[in-house]
Length: 267
Image (cartoon, rainbow, N blue to C red; front, side):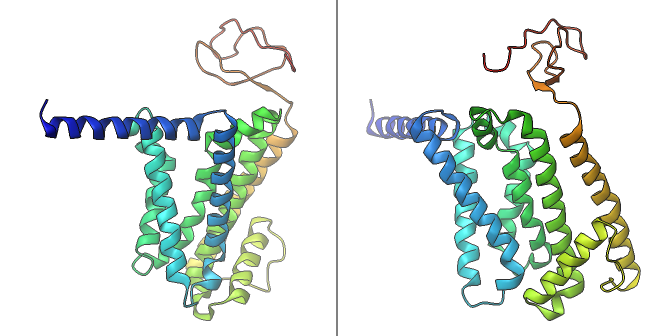
């Protein structure tokens, strides 16, 4: 065997070992994988905190250094998840991957894409679709709360996206904490349709922003109420059609009629 072939074989073997290691860390259930997944979630939450605080700290001298450091973390996580996936193309087609790529671009080009920086908070929505979080929920018997948690995260993501949009396009001239709080106050007041009058957005664009915020916000509140107060259902994927939510005493899938064998709680 030629030296070049041997090097290629060693490189291929090293990449295979790396991918196997990343699969065990990202998708495994061992104590080491659990610690890694918890650490990854904590880092993600810290990154989301940075995104929320960005409008307040973006004038500081160290902001660009923090921005590029977060870009390195997001890029490393995206590459690692691709390597850990059994189907990279399928993973890249998922909306969560598009969101992460877009966030990475805004981090690498903070000046050119400054007006789109408020969309970075979509990382919270992307994180909520991560299987590792809900795997830990299931391990603690909290799976019935998954849908309500999704609804809460969707509402929070929407609130911060609209707050960032309002701050960027209506309050940015007075950069700082006070103006960001004004933008957040306007968003909450608009979504809940209370407190109107003391802070309003000027012009037709302001009125359209308020209208869209109210319509989507009320829809998300209704969705949250449904997730909390609707009758409890169990999560059990139907082997035939894949439907996951069923009545606790269901014998047949309501979508396709397939016979179900739902285990009792605690079995």
